[in-house]
Image 1 (cartoon, rainbow, N blue to C red):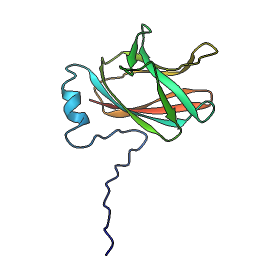
Image 2 (cartoon, rainbow, N blue to C red):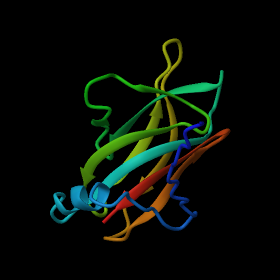
Image 3 (cartoon, rainbow, N blue to C red):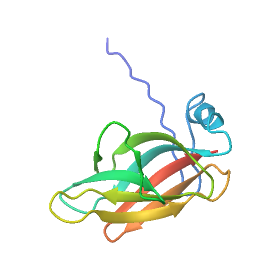
Length: 133
């Protein structure tokens, strides 16, 4: 007799982001007056099938990842960010290059206490990040 596997998939449209019950929303409540950066998905990568990325704030300070210089991410891959940021803050996605200068893969400005998706876009690369209020 074969065992059946059950999985639950949450589809997220271009204008909204959803968190699993008890995860992102609860974490967003810990952000006080800010919002919660949930996960980032590579929709298109700029080169060689993978990008090495990090998020920096408007002052250029790296806010993610916390324990490594960057995260290597492939097309269609999703990686947890799990960071609180202030409403109105500027966030930039940077591709870390060993041989050239680092590339700015796009910027977003957090526009209020609204649960939604934002996109970082630049040239060939496109990334979607979920923001939970």
